Image 1 (cartoon, rainbow, N blue to C red):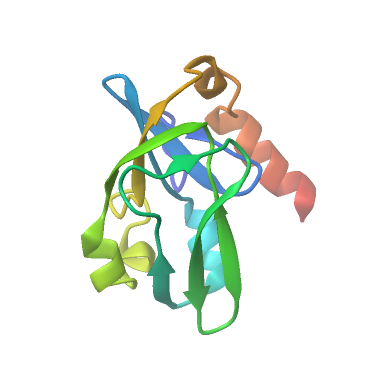
Image 2 (image 1 turned 30 degrees about the vertical axis):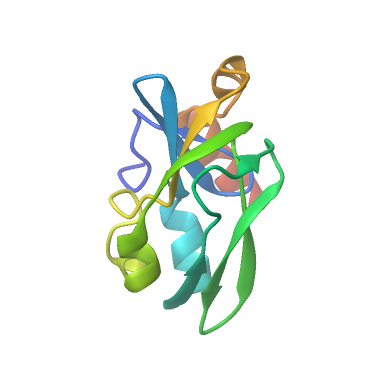
Length: 128
Protein backbone atom coordinates (compact mmCIF):
# COMPACT_ATOMS: atom_id res chain seq x y z
CA UNK A 1 0.00 0.00 0.00
CA UNK A 2 3.05 2.28 0.13
CA UNK A 3 2.46 3.13 -3.54
CA UNK A 4 -0.92 4.61 -2.55
CA UNK A 5 -0.69 7.39 0.06
CA UNK A 6 -3.39 7.21 2.73
CA UNK A 7 -3.97 10.97 2.70
CA UNK A 8 -5.36 10.89 -0.86
CA UNK A 9 -8.71 9.90 -2.33
CA UNK A 10 -8.92 7.75 -5.46
CA UNK A 11 -11.22 7.04 -8.41
CA UNK A 12 -12.01 3.74 -10.12
CA UNK A 13 -10.43 5.33 -13.22
CA UNK A 14 -7.06 5.52 -11.37
CA UNK A 15 -6.86 9.23 -10.63
CA UNK A 16 -5.94 10.56 -7.19
CA UNK A 17 -7.34 13.66 -5.55
CA UNK A 18 -6.36 15.73 -2.53
CA UNK A 19 -7.68 18.88 -0.93
CA UNK A 20 -5.71 22.09 -1.36
CA UNK A 21 -7.69 24.53 0.74
CA UNK A 22 -11.14 24.47 -0.86
CA UNK A 23 -9.77 23.24 -4.20
CA UNK A 24 -8.92 19.69 -5.30
CA UNK A 25 -5.58 18.72 -6.87
CA UNK A 26 -5.74 15.80 -9.34
CA UNK A 27 -3.17 13.36 -10.72
CA UNK A 28 -2.82 9.75 -11.85
CA UNK A 29 -2.06 6.89 -9.50
CA UNK A 30 1.01 4.68 -9.34
CA UNK A 31 -1.11 1.90 -10.86
CA UNK A 32 -2.08 4.08 -13.84
CA UNK A 33 1.46 5.15 -14.68
CA UNK A 34 2.74 1.60 -14.12
CA UNK A 35 0.12 0.14 -16.47
CA UNK A 36 0.80 2.81 -19.10
CA UNK A 37 4.56 2.46 -19.11
CA UNK A 38 6.75 5.36 -20.26
CA UNK A 39 4.54 8.45 -20.46
CA UNK A 40 5.46 10.57 -23.50
CA UNK A 41 2.61 13.11 -23.76
CA UNK A 42 0.02 14.73 -21.51
CA UNK A 43 -2.79 16.97 -22.78
CA UNK A 44 -4.51 19.11 -20.15
CA UNK A 45 -7.41 21.57 -20.34
CA UNK A 46 -6.93 25.33 -20.20
CA UNK A 47 -7.35 27.23 -16.93
CA UNK A 48 -11.01 28.22 -16.67
CA UNK A 49 -12.31 25.05 -18.33
CA UNK A 50 -15.29 23.51 -16.57
CA UNK A 51 -14.89 19.78 -15.89
CA UNK A 52 -17.54 17.27 -14.86
CA UNK A 53 -16.99 14.43 -12.39
CA UNK A 54 -16.25 11.12 -14.16
CA UNK A 55 -15.94 12.90 -17.54
CA UNK A 56 -12.74 13.17 -19.57
CA UNK A 57 -10.63 16.29 -19.04
CA UNK A 58 -7.49 15.33 -20.96
CA UNK A 59 -5.29 12.65 -22.43
CA UNK A 60 -2.19 10.79 -21.26
CA UNK A 61 -0.14 8.91 -23.84
CA UNK A 62 2.59 6.35 -23.34
CA UNK A 63 4.67 4.16 -25.58
CA UNK A 64 1.97 1.49 -25.06
CA UNK A 65 -1.38 3.30 -25.09
CA UNK A 66 -3.41 6.51 -25.15
CA UNK A 67 -5.79 6.93 -22.22
CA UNK A 68 -8.31 9.54 -21.22
CA UNK A 69 -8.01 11.35 -17.90
CA UNK A 70 -11.19 11.60 -15.83
CA UNK A 71 -12.12 14.31 -13.35
CA UNK A 72 -12.85 13.11 -9.81
CA UNK A 73 -15.00 16.20 -9.09
CA UNK A 74 -16.96 18.77 -11.07
CA UNK A 75 -15.76 22.34 -11.18
CA UNK A 76 -13.53 24.93 -12.82
CA UNK A 77 -9.87 24.29 -13.56
CA UNK A 78 -7.86 26.89 -11.62
CA UNK A 79 -4.33 25.61 -12.33
CA UNK A 80 -2.57 23.19 -14.66
CA UNK A 81 0.88 21.72 -14.11
CA UNK A 82 2.88 23.03 -17.07
CA UNK A 83 5.92 21.12 -15.78
CA UNK A 84 4.14 17.84 -16.58
CA UNK A 85 3.21 18.87 -20.12
CA UNK A 86 6.84 19.96 -20.65
CA UNK A 87 8.22 16.74 -19.09
CA UNK A 88 5.55 14.00 -19.28
CA UNK A 89 7.96 11.36 -17.94
CA UNK A 90 7.76 13.06 -14.53
CA UNK A 91 4.48 11.15 -14.09
CA UNK A 92 6.53 7.92 -14.08
CA UNK A 93 9.15 9.38 -11.74
CA UNK A 94 6.63 10.34 -9.04
CA UNK A 95 2.93 10.25 -9.93
CA UNK A 96 1.99 11.99 -6.68
CA UNK A 97 4.35 14.95 -7.17
CA UNK A 98 3.44 15.23 -10.86
CA UNK A 99 -0.08 16.55 -10.29
CA UNK A 100 -2.07 17.48 -13.40
CA UNK A 101 -4.81 19.99 -12.60
CA UNK A 102 -6.36 21.85 -9.69
CA UNK A 103 -10.15 22.23 -9.63
CA UNK A 104 -12.42 24.61 -7.75
CA UNK A 105 -15.30 22.20 -7.05
CA UNK A 106 -18.90 23.21 -7.71
CA UNK A 107 -20.13 20.34 -5.53
CA UNK A 108 -17.57 19.85 -2.74
CA UNK A 109 -19.39 16.76 -1.44
CA UNK A 110 -18.26 14.83 -4.56
CA UNK A 111 -14.79 14.65 -2.97
CA UNK A 112 -16.24 12.76 0.01
CA UNK A 113 -17.65 10.12 -2.36
CA UNK A 114 -14.21 9.17 -3.72
CA UNK A 115 -12.47 5.96 -2.65
CA UNK A 116 -10.19 5.91 0.38
CA UNK A 117 -6.83 4.13 0.16
CA UNK A 118 -7.93 0.69 1.52
CA UNK A 119 -10.97 0.60 -0.79
CA UNK A 120 -8.91 1.60 -3.83
CA UNK A 121 -6.22 -1.00 -3.10
CA UNK A 122 -8.92 -3.70 -2.67
CA UNK A 123 -10.39 -2.71 -6.06
CA UNK A 124 -6.96 -3.19 -7.66
CA UNK A 125 -6.55 -6.60 -6.05
CA UNK A 126 -10.05 -7.64 -7.14
CA UNK A 127 -9.25 -6.66 -10.74
CA UNK A 128 -6.22 -8.99 -10.94
